[in-house]
Amino acid sequence: MKKLLPSLLSIFCVVLSCVVAMSPPEQSAAAEQNAAPVTDRMKSAQQLQEKMKRLREGAEIVDASGTFEWIGDRLSFVQDGEKMVLKILENRMMERVVQAQESSTGELNWVVSGIVTEYRGGNFLLLKHAVLTGKRGE
Image (cartoon, rainbow, N blue to C red):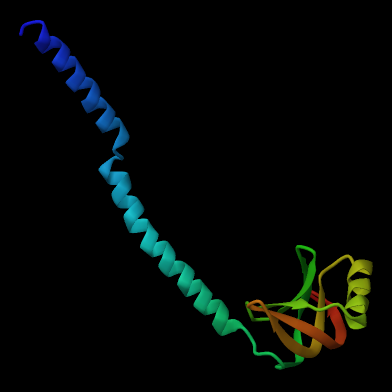
């Protein structure tokens, strides 16, 4: 019995240390559980906000002032005072805007008109008319 007790005690210590090492600390597990619902709520609120900002297919934009900027490989229109960004569909009017943007050294102000389309949850603008009104800050 004297020889068996030290070996049982050492086995018990090894098993106990393995169980402790494998179980996550209670604080981080509780933090993860609390963080997940907040993240899900934030995502659903952002999705709802984006959906509310979307325009319906066929809506017309008339004489909206703003600027054009490249977002990734797409030209986009950012209307003054609005957080909504409309990706521009390729056509001859877009080509003229790009030529003007490339020949200028500053950010240009524009007044645009066009038709809004929807695709996969995003809005696109088919430019009908774009008038250069000057450089930003002038």
